[in-house]
Length: 387
Image 1: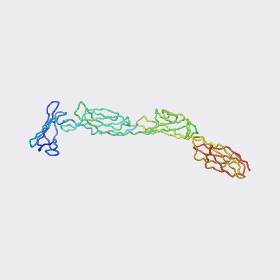
Image 2 (image 1 turned 90 degrees about the vertical axis):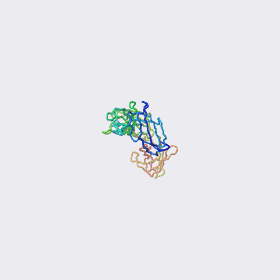
Image 3 (image 1 turned 180 degrees about the vertical axis):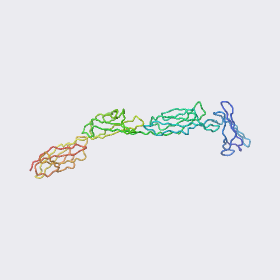
């Protein structure tokens, strides 16, 4: 308030628009900041009115020099009960498979404007909300309330209580509790996947794949029945439903040309169970074979052996070591007498050649050890006479 000289008299009248009468005049003001000529004035006591409501503020003031001010409707005074939900609490902030709901409780209290007394607010509605879940409860005579909401959605991450606008108690101020966090703890699940074979020949198939869906129950891993497992590892997206033991059987794969992974997954239909997936690698053994083998005597003490290999699968080994073997009878007793470290591409096949000391007659062959990724291969047998 600003005046030419020190303000000495301030009065505020509260006017009821409903009764068209002044219901109270307040004159017990004190300067709380600024100066007497330009300062802020505050009432030193509580305003006592007969009824809750909204009242027009009319002001009159004078200063030591005789200047006066009289103004109607400078503002409005809201005479209302200030409610609170200060002691609200929840029974848990983490929900899991066994505990799927949250209970929120507390007291609705009100501070009355005339006396400042705080009393329970019974018989009023408290709304409890948590994302898409909602409930309304009526407070008991002591102002207490309690409500339990299920947790049903992944986005349901908080819960709170509120006293909202009440048309039957317009001058009870709205209030709300703090928002309590909710954390969803998912229980682990797993898929145990068992293909009928884990290694197949080139263009072979895995004839079937079984999968068992389990969840980590309080008593250990237990099957989940009636759940839909899916996989895109069989040419098309295939779905199967688990039986009472949690088992599902998937069909044969398409012919496999290279190493392959069979994947099976479950998208959880339960907020409190985690998704599960499993992958099993299948080795496809690539073909390997000898195209040809020659063995000729180069002199009385030496034999020259050569030939080539082919790999008709999806790829070729990085190195191709070939063993040259000799047997006096051709019916056993094969001995490796030389090794070609790496056969080389010659435009038709992967060629190799070497010489080995041998003066007597006997049988010659070449071998290749490609396991586990490639087939082992043995060439034809060639006889070389003595000199």
